Image (cartoon, rainbow, N blue to C red; front, side):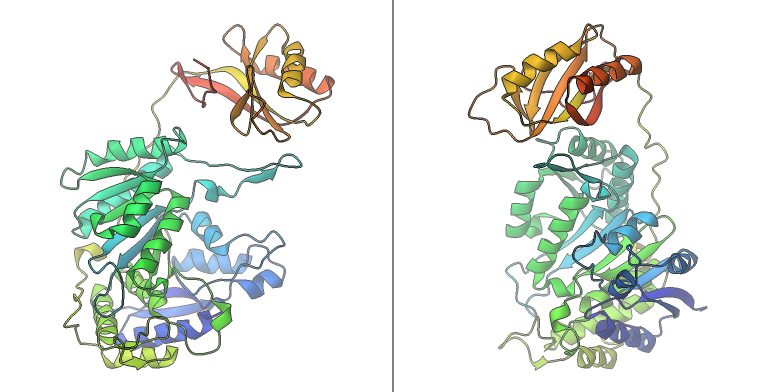
Length: 482
């Protein structure tokens, strides 16, 4: 077999310790890969590259298509952005896949029958990273959810379940509160679910879903979530299997893919030969299945299972009475190599087959149906702290002019005018809703309204047009609005 060229980034902290161990195991198992090494992360940040990566390195990633990566440290302060998020989004790696399996009775856990996979949308949601400080007291983060983004991750989840002989798929969202953003994710889940009749779907509000996941994880098989919930839930799920250090992760796109451990760079234990290389190794196993080498993936994974089954454990999972030998990072890697070709006897052996194939999703019909869009008003956000909501409402009514009616004012989403309550706490951030008296708001009329507001001495910091789509409101309504 011709060697597949893979980009390798050792990363920061414990990365330079665990990555060589993983490479040594891959070589010993006969993986047909060759590595092109790159440097990304903390040293690159400190060298003046705010993304933690150089332009030349981007070209290596784009050429090789597959990256095996150690954990990265994002420096605190200085406006540095997460390199993981940047790579995932820049190279279109929309699906994050994290198997979470308990290894009872070898590794202590309260959930011996846990075996689930969390599939997280990787590009949208609050992780768009669009944040602003709008007033002295208030900052905002935009939550962006798109129909194509929802459909392709949900289809990926169902296809993954089908390819890997999983039995059901659950969706976690918070659409009882965020009815438009999370509501879109839930609605598309319902649309896609009917195309997979052999895979029952279920919907959970994320808070009770998280509670049940932590208490009774055997209820779940495949879980698909928006980005932020998926990030949180996948770490919780990994930890309750026995250790977050055992989790591998795949980031899959149409063109590129990245494989890594789910844990961080753990700088406090770097250089001590005590880090667990299992997370990165199991990420590499997922990489081998992705590039079409399931036999090597099977060989390595079964050797790893045999190693932990025989009680050879790194410090993070070592337990008196259960473990037999406390192994360092390098020693653990050698133990895995010594067991290549063996299969576990207590734990369930793996055998990668059809599920090893790369999954392609068809979301060509994900575009929303054409709809008649009409602008009927505008929300104007003000930075203001000079009086009461009643004062503000009286003054802004004069700014509305003949084209608009001031319908309501809210503060942090709570209506404070008209008919607000004095007990409601207010900051300096106000949303003022103007509805067109004619039923349609032209751009010229909106600009004139903003001109009147500015002339009256108000600092408007943000606007949002209020639109209907086929007559249905495309915005959240305030208290008392029809």
